[in-house]
Image (cartoon, rainbow, N blue to C red; front, side, top):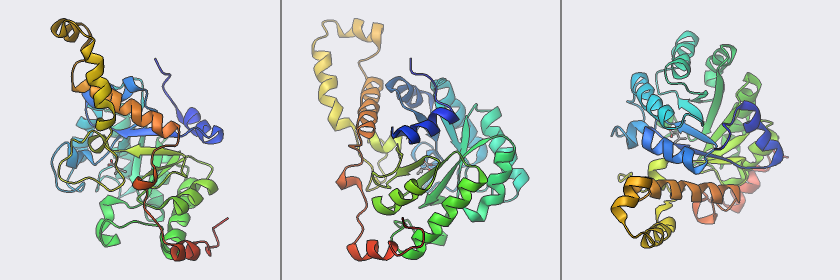
Length: 310
Ligand code: KIV
């Protein structure tokens, strides 16, 4: 069995250049499939409010609901580094509230770290949680909980202003002591610049292939979420389904095989799909060009004028 990662081993991967693999899970079966496949980290994301609980956005999901999802994921993946995602309203109000709710993820659900959205505007909350001895992952770029202040689900980091602001937030979060940073929905080049200039691992979801690791939403990569699919998400089932079916062709007694191995159903397909994702991220094959947000030459030229660009 793979050794459970910790703060040190995750941060060491940045130094050695090994991409970190990260996937969301909100329940026992998928978390267990992710652990069996050898994932580095699991995120119990507030996206679970949408893909698991059926809300239209991530905003309605409550702290109590997140704890139930996180507990279930932890039972499914006892040996994996799990990050609990602070839902909207659980950390913005006060430092005390932020620490109290972060602590719930650790004590009640057994999470190893928490993630929260925002940079300088929530830096006092980040510091308070770090000071309470809880590992924190930052989240910048497109931050779904505050899409109204961004004017919608827009790709970030494509203008000088957006790049500079993200870089300043990233530096502030690193200074405040976050263990890692997640960038969402950015072209490769600005995300890669931020990763290059930070000492902590910078992971991406829809942030190209120049960052230190990748996150994917489980229900997108399994094709379970039917309302929409983000442009950067790849469904891995078509790539493994033939191998799955071919493996079963060798089986004489399917009923007995199912009883003995339980590798005859969706769980086995999930494990294979996650293993394929891991393989592609480790080989830096995912995200390939078609899953990366493009940036125009003139936009790139503009952000390269930033005082932060090296
Ligand atoms: O909730 C989640 O899964 C997330 C990702 C969209 C980054 O925060």
